[in-house]
Figure (cartoon, one colour):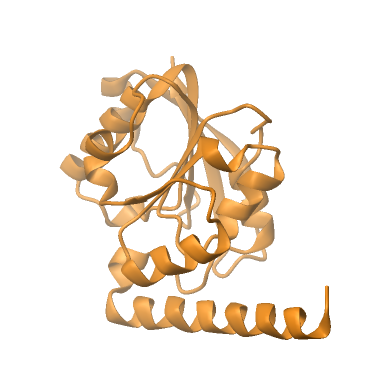
Length: 197
């Protein structure tokens, strides 16, 4: 990489962080984090993904987790990045021009992503703790409509426990397991896997 390319990449990274913090200040509940996902958290979110997998990423943000997903060997054309923030969509389009970008609210997932029942993973960076019980159930119903029978949802949380309560998991026929903890993330984060019983 040339010196000018390196400077340009550093400038883009700085600009991306600026857009992230500006968006967080304007609407912290929608963003759900005070900083973009760290590399360890991103790697945990992408645990178990493999070449050939079809993936939906919810709340793709500035693309830290998107890159971790692609690093597992998932083809760009098999990664649908869902994001509703216009500034983040511009960043994603610049960084990942071959990934299908979906400018939509994740609560209308089935209306915007083709191929229900054909995805292997949904990787969610959404702040589920801020969702109402009704929104959470609506989202999960759509997520598992998009996933194949052996598909899984990877969901992060800062709370230390699964952000999908036991009662809702029971109603939807789901089980959860802790994938891992990113202790040095800001703030520390936990990643859970949800799948059908």
